[in-house]
Length: 117
Length: 108
Image (cartoon, rainbow over all chains, first blue to last red; front, side):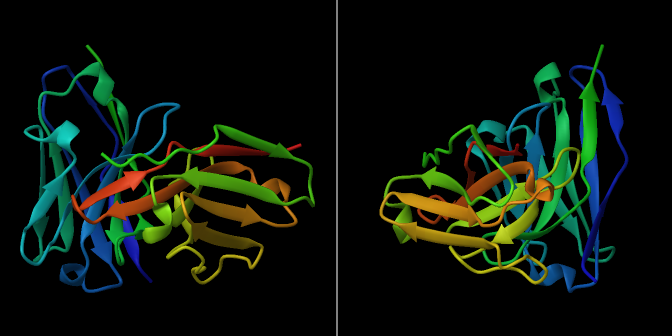
């Protein structure tokens, strides 16, 4: 069955860089884009970007341009989201999701990133 | 950028039909997808391509999309349907995912 398993929660200080992993199984990893979405406490879903694991092509939401980098490793079927220069406003639950055809049909369990001094 | 507008909340008694709207400029020309998110959990796809249901989603969930409004309907609503619901489209001109603001469904 399709599964996306994300890395564990992390606490970061302001200005730090965080990297979240998302390991896929149960389907050909290279055949589907991976979407990244975050959710701040008590807030709605916020789309961050997507990556085509086969080509490495990416697309980012304007808000995160210059701060987020999405990558994929087809050898380990793992997608990564790296966010630099984190602030308190980046405290959120970060999700990866498989893109079926411009919608997300399977989601990871989420990774909590807490920014605290 | 493309904006999707949802009502913040919908409250209703068990057994009734919940109707959640998602407004957007000519949204009827796009494919709309809906997600259910229970507290503390990852979102779950409940409707894709306006009115298709993934395997395992009850027939009580249905969708419609026309003009400037898409709707998600949940018939015979149950306590287990209490959750936040988000609509989503892919904005093809900019190649961006767009989520609605979310609607909290409360079963009284």
